Length: 114
Length: 112
Image (cartoon, rainbow over all chains, first blue to last red; front, side, top):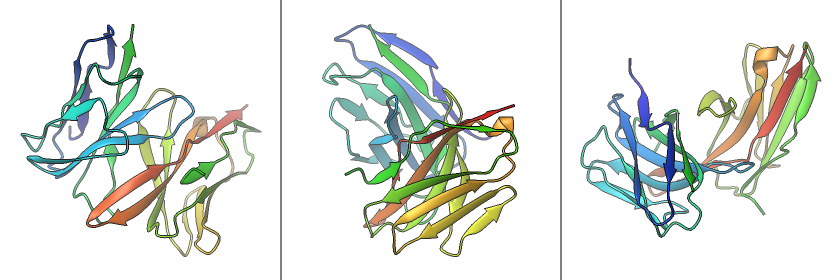
């Protein structure tokens, strides 16, 4: 099946720990995105990548880091510098980064900081 | 002011009812418009794009008013399975990047 996978589905982290969220797509899409969603709020863009080996900060990049070494993979690291990391994290991809291409979302990872 | 604003609801309607959601956006440079549907604790999925001339997909009708910076979604003959949160999404172009801005969503609960 073609699509976007995220793992793990649920993740618990102690304060002060870094944690990496996985996102993989087999849609051959160039662009990939990371969003976070908090209760009662819209999705907010953390980082995006339009092509391999390139990525840009979104609106709320502080405390996060990404890499894009392979077209199909765009992992997100939530560092200890992120002050309020508990949230629902959604990865998305689109055929290209511009134009009118639809963004498709993965099933998400729920991160809870204990 | 939020870039994309929606009435969060919830909207509680009986099966078979017609319900309308509204959305306003603040940036007149916004270029493309969408409605996404998000089920509880799931990822958003594209419901439909919104075109200037208005468009319909079965029981769903989307309309755009650029002059008023206003988007709407009409659902006719509501089904129990329509219960979800509906996200209004606006795309703005900067350089060659199409950035999506999401509203906070409107929750619909269809009751038997």
